[in-house]
Image 1 (tube, rainbow, N blue to C red):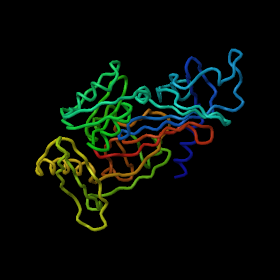
Image 2: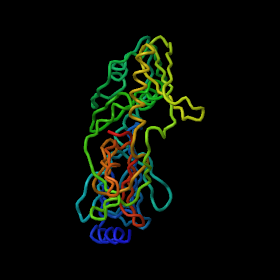
Image 3: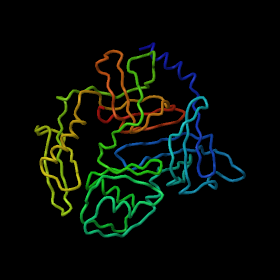
Image 4: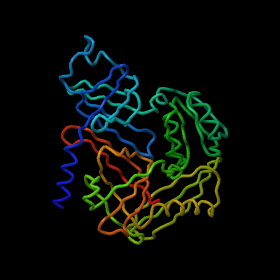
Length: 334
């Protein structure tokens, strides 16, 4: 253990944190810190930037005169001058206290600025998205009939949130392309990374809050509900029959028989109940793991416990006291 701490400390000596934040047309090299929150089951990623209270003037203007709500934001960070992009979005809110805190939304910000009043007798998902998504954004979605639908003074962002709540249809917007589908349709990990437990030689894990569980340790059941276009609901329950089991609700759109709905629910359960790690693990600011990537966890003390996991959530932090870190919360086993 002492050897691991020594190696980690030596690594930190050679890792000089650097960052650049662009707010509108202003490039800032001196910030107190930032936080970025990513989650594949949330509509959007968010960021919070903290600027020192003694930040000087730029071109004769105060920092608050340099940008405004709605301006484009980028956050780049890394070590030893090698920067990578951690966030792209827009300024949502500018604080009034010191140090100055700036709240940001990702690419979904323009969707929050829209407003629609629409009524459908028998809407399809594609039709609704065509009506509310700006032409500058492309999209893909499954062929789903939603039935009767009313949009009453709601933004495109709110409509997409309602699709999550009522039909279990999740959305992710990245690089100008919107994907809409079931939660576990977002499990196609784009990049794969490796973290090493109990391994001083690699030493790329700061800390972990992991627990290894086996299938029989889970007490969970799923209540699956399918909503037909005419409003009729079909319901099935799968999983543990224990009275103290954790019950989760799954919503699906479109008419389904009980057999079809049960198959959907069992498919979700198979991804949720597995032999492997649950919890979160924290690494350095690099490699740049993101929500939606996959993480192979190696255990030097027990190679049989190694596994590959979808990263469901990533919390990125950058500040002088805690350094530059990425905390990855594991989803299901791949």
